Amino acid sequence: MKYRLLGRSGLRVSELALGCSTFGSNWGPIGSDRAESRRVLDTFRAGGGNFLDTSNKYQEGQSEEFVGEFIQGNRDYWVIGTKFSLVDGMTDGADPNSFGNHRKNLLRSIEGSLRRLRTDYIDLLWLHMWDYTTPIEEIICSLTDVVRSGKVRYIGASNFPAWWLVKANAFAQHHALSPFIATQVEYALTERSLEPEFLPMCHEEDIALCAWSPLGGGICTGKYNRTGNPNAAASYRLAEHVDPARKAFWHAATVRNLAIMEKVNAIADAIGRPTVQVALRWLTQQVVPTVPIFAVHNAEQCAEILSATEFHLTAKQWQQIEAATRPAVASIWPEVGPYPYPMLEYGSPALPGFYSRGLLYGKSEYVIENHRRPFHMNHRPVG
Image 1 (tube, helix red, strand yellow):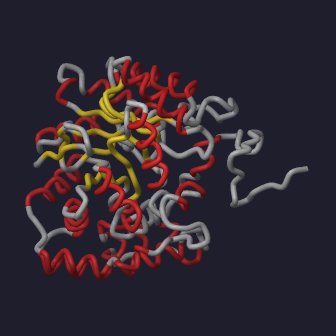
Image 2 (tube, one colour):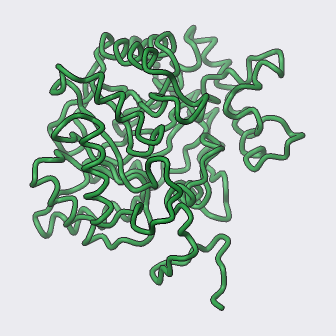
């Protein structure tokens, strides 16, 4: 395992990050129990990993609880990133101030995360999602306050537009406040629409690029293409969207992605490596340093993924994969635009069961009169 500097900071993080969204059972099959989650973390640590990614939302707080339990006695080794913005816990989001990026929710969320993580500081605090609402000045000043308090070391923004990050960091620099050192984006062989904006921005501004769902919700492992028995994929996350008879929302995008992965599987076979390793290796060798955040259900999957750090793609192999996945540069939802806009409006083929606006606004979406930005999808007229 190699280590990378996280953006414009001096912080050293492992070249792969462990996503802890599967730590817990509150989300049913999208998770693992305490014992298996501990095995996963121990496997990651044995492979040299030190970068963990969680959220106050994951498993409705259970993920942070497990992480907090597992790191006891070795807290300073770990670089822990957690998030706020979304409706957390087993609540329905009826309280209009229980979510969003404003100061009140920030302070409320941090105290809950610190308690669940059993620590007095968070290494990297992410805004989980752009809320189209809270002014940049409020966000930067509030985050700077928690950094100066010692409760947070660094800040990052997940699912924010590239232009917003540049504007926010210009404000921070001008006023000697805390800048964003990293952005967390949906980035995989089947979702490359961010590249024209985010790769140049991250290079020019020295902002770290961390990729969530780098395996496209599992489709980039190649398993959907390789199963000979349609029923074998029935328990997979994307099963509903693979089956044309179900007429699921992301079916067309999933068909496109299956065609992409058919080509990638052939390249992986020629290389002699599992498709899952090739998919992650391609990201880590991107021209802009990229840290994939992977999540698994068991320690065996974790060990297989860590082997992606043991080889390099040749320039020819990298280019072959780039050519095979080029259709993924196009938006999955052209009417809305490239990432992050489809994600912000509805969700992603990688996370078909998660409705972004519901997570961000709970039951309060249409009772908040947001004069700054009415939703251009499903917008309700006044009166």
